[in-house]
Length: 210
Image (cartoon, rainbow, N blue to C red; front, top):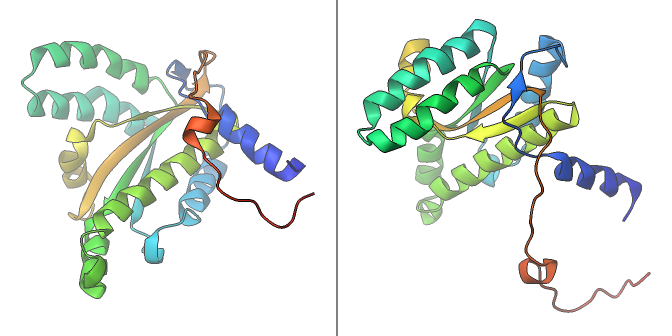
């Protein structure tokens, strides 16, 4: 393994779920943080280069209101399972004390346009759209982690429609995930893995053996 790939692999290893976060002291100025997210989303690949992923960065009071008002209201309105609400509602303030949140959306208008342009693959574009979002989420998470942020990924997508209406976003936006980030206040726990041979199998060999 070269030093270049070793650094990349280490960044992947360091990308862990950190839930105990705080707002400060700041790790990056807003300008640098915003540029990092923009560049990460920009260079995350998508099928047919469809570029269907969209990201909204919430900072300051917008982040606070999202977790103290927007999400609780939407979650309670969309769910009648009292036991589930009793589990999830106490966790929401934990996300609010972080620095910010990156909301990941997919443009369903882009997906539809691709389906019309390439009807032979029409049934696959929704899957590819979610794959593109997952790549953008993972890349953004890894990039923020490399800068020293702690992050965790949430999927409280009930808030999507009301958030879109509140901020006048395109109606074709579909909320996929929320990446919460901030100053880490805990170390990640031990992570177990399946055997490498169970997850990755090799058939054959290249002619170039060093």
